[in-house]
Length: 99
Image 1 (cartoon, one colour):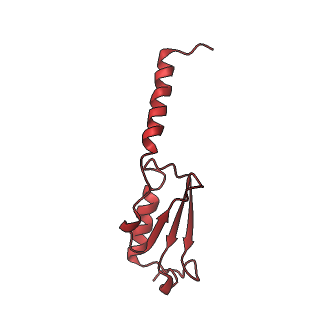
Image 2 (cartoon, one colour; image 1 turned 30 degrees about the horizontal axis):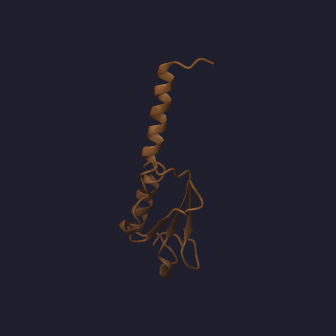
Image 3 (cartoon, one colour; image 1 turned 180 degrees about the horizontal axis):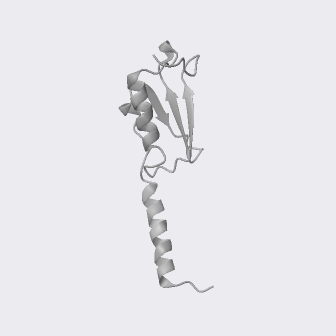
């Protein structure tokens, strides 16, 4: 197979884009009041988002609702290589509904 110079440049551009994307990180943990976000080191492509209102059994209030929208709007689109998000609740319950 003969590869043209435009195909080589395209491959180089794609490779450079992937390298630059690796430098982006998931949303900062400190920017959320009721969510925690982590990315397990030994599980590439996975992010763990935890609802963190255990005293209220993770019931969703207005602030948590906004934070969920923000984090899911950013994950996987910021060049963080996230392809799977595990949503979990902290404490005894996943989520008690809307507060």
